[in-house]
Length: 143
Image (spheres, rainbow, N blue to C red):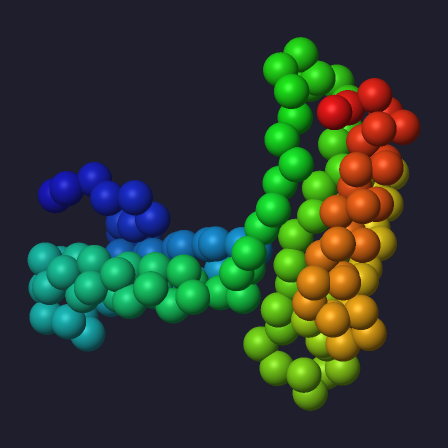
């Protein structure tokens, strides 16, 4: 059998098949392909490979549509850099709207500022996030 990323063989007790796990942008997909359901170990493996392609296509269409990173100069590994990114929700039924996010700090001390596209417009929200990121980076001595 080939060794394929995301695929694990399970042979335990009455359970025999392939377990497939994929994650992208904190979204996870997993599925078990039983040998008995697909007729043999080989056919279950084949169906798992087909499912991996389909799941990859679905996960690649996630809403992390645009990221802008303000690059860190070499030698600045110890400093936390401010960066911006755009968030586009799947639906607006949960009162989530598109916005630009500026964030900086370590995991324990993360600071996040959100600029709404509905309030400032697309260009205005992006400009405000970029201006804040520049200001934070200048205060930290990062160009």
